[in-house]
Length: 435
Image 1 (spheres, rainbow, N blue to C red):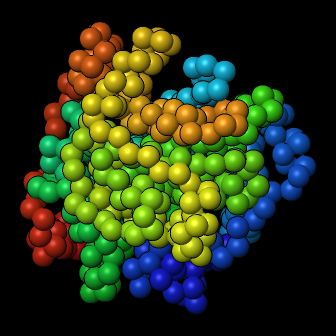
Image 2: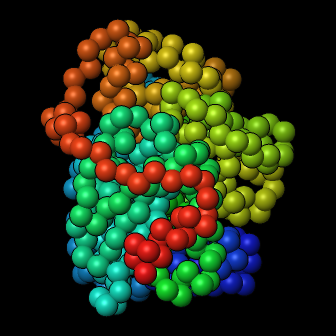
């Protein structure tokens, strides 16, 4: 599998090189040189295939001979250990529940796959591999669970102080062992910027083996393609055009859906659903990509002002605004609208949405009202509502019970290193801790 940098198409890397580099040296993002298209026989056989079998066939098409087939099957088998059901709310609306993994968030798929892949390729036992990851909420918990106690790998999670839910914070800060949390006095964008600077620091990288577990790393992104096909399998018998509504922050999830479409997924359209951090919906409306500082919202994992993965979306469509808009519609909603949607769905369907999935629901309903055609909307349910128990219980005026693992988690002591937004201090900490 060959990949290129979004900043310089002539800069190439193998999958293994991209996996451990995280970012290309020119600060771009890695993209596949060739996106394989699945054969028509794959679509015909899809209803008979298990989720794990679908994932294996897609991974094999993407990665080619990078990993031996038997090894790849084992990696997929260890990754896909929980379901991704589409739960229907009505005849034209379904929730793709992606929160049945260990951290109760969609990012479990990517984090578990990546941990298995890195463990396979990590052939230098004399030096620990240091994984740097920024989180606005769910990424950190998924990465912590996915990499926990993986031999030869240390994980450093940067998160914005006071801007993740109490349960999300516990998932980052209580495991210990090879997982370290840094509480940054800033925004998610600040956390992401500190990590990008570390990757571009040649002197630091000569002394430490660094990689990333954010969706900027292609290995975190690719397995997210799997569940779009799994979702389509469950609804294709309806015979309706399929529209995916994707709650979006850093836009890795939407990018994976667009890659799935280019591989042959029969998706008619995609919706970029954001909160008031609406950089991409503004681009889709006006044609100008103008990042701005992120604003704190109820759907905190989407509080991203400068989404990194949008560069990949532009690459898919040759940075042509009209082509991008033909594939994606953008919608943005505030906290008041989000809460109203949560109450309405609970009242009408007795279904509990978390704030992020509620934004996706709003986008689907807005798009549905604009379109004369009958379609089926699949809203990506990105997190279990219990991860936001306090907010959800208050909004719905009900006592939302916690799953037993989360209840136990709340009792664990927090361990995190406070840090200002200062790259020199972050660099010094990395050198002192791992050098």
